[in-house]
Length: 273
Image (cartoon, rainbow, N blue to C red; front, top):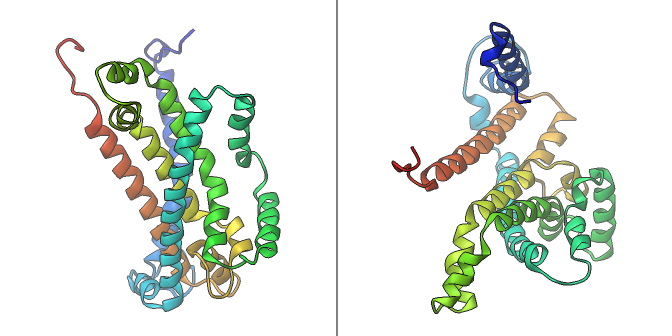
């Protein structure tokens, strides 16, 4: 039986209120850290005695912080590209493949989601030492790819399963080659799923810290690793500014994805109404 809020009378306002309280409770740490990033105190003190942008200026002017930000961007973009290039073919194999072990391949592609990060980190660290990649850009990108690739496969697989394959076959019947039908019909139709996988891949790499600690070196650190290292030395509000920057970028990307999805939706016709 479906829950009918209108039939619940005034009790539905209790549900609305509890929903708002849960939302505020979940947002409270984010609001708290953003307020701290604008505080004038040299320590993480709340409430701030005054307001300033000094910590953001320091975040982008100090070479160590700025380099960490750029490293996170570069690694995130590399992971996003690789997850799409590997995730899309893997999704086609999972959905349309007819070979022994297809279900095992589908399960294997999501295994990193259930394995503890510390276990994956130890394994990747040992492998990077074995092949001389420890502390390199390649090791960072490959380690983050292990976590990002399942999301790319899941998003693309779901989009591909919801796509009517008969449309692709119709394009082939009308004269298109299989490659043309795939490129001009299937891929544009499942592009929202591919885009969602790419977005998740970047965000996972952008704020990942456990594997990054294993792969970091004094000359190569991402922003989360730099924040972790700074926390062990002092409690400068620059850390709050860096955290606010990470939250802001995440929100911007999610809003951009939502807007793209909004503009791509089909127009409402009179028949729909």
